[in-house]
Image (cartoon, rainbow, N blue to C red):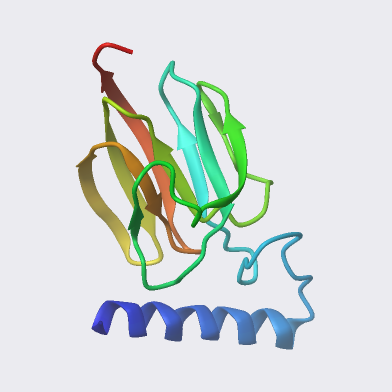
Length: 136
C-alpha cells in the first residue's frame, strides 16, 4: 500500500512538472510525462502485450481473461518503446519467464513467473530475460 501511494505521488510530481514546463503529453495510453510502461523482450520467443487493463488493483489475470485489452504481438529481441503505455505482458501456457523490473525506484529483482497476464505500472520497464516452455 505504501509503495503504491509513493508511486502515485511520484507520478503526480512528474505530471505536474511536465505540465508546468509545457512538455507535450505522451502520445498514447496513460503515460505520465515521458514515462510509459514498457516491455523489452530479450528472448528468441515472440510474445503478447496489452495496451489496456481493467483495474489498477489487479496485478495478475489468468490466460483467457477479458481484463487485458488492445493486445499486440511483440517480436523476439524487440521493445515496445514508442508504442505508448503498455499495461501488461502475457506468459503463455506451459511457460515460465524470468523477468526483471526497473522503475522509478530502481531494480525490483528477478521474478520467475508462470502462465498468465501480469500488470506493469506506468513507470515500469519489464525486461523479459529468459524463458522455458514445456511441450509447446
